[in-house]
Amino acid sequence: MNIYRYLYYKLYCIWLKKKDESENASINAVITLTFLLYVNFFSIPLILLAIYKKDFINLPEINLNVGALITIIMVGIGLLNYLLLARKKQHIKIVEEFIIESEEKRKKGMVYVLLYLIISFGIPLYVFLFTSP
Image 1 (cartoon, one colour):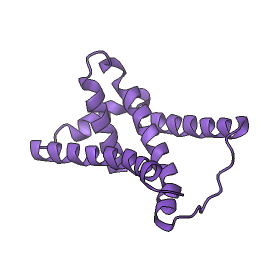
Image 2: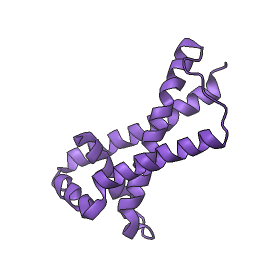
Image 3: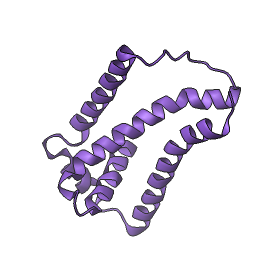
Image 4: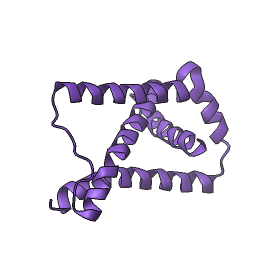
């Protein structure tokens, strides 16, 4: 849970630096984290596809019902993230928890977060662009 909160804290700090988005930084961090979790969840079958060169999960065709289910899942994860991280100024407690980190830890933390972002987006891109079915 601490890594989850730390990732939220770093995303919150990134959004806080944007001049036009600073008042919405907590919500933007929740949305970003939700999207990253969604991408990571759907990367699991992609990794298996890239390694073993065959589908392990038969994905249904995208129709209205599947699209609605995906939307409900994303909104549910987003709502859960909001309840755990941003509701009733929860993000202030998280900021206070991590604001006292040293400069060295702050730099290491930012490197880890950037690596997480690169890997999160890199896996699906790699599978889609460089593997053949």
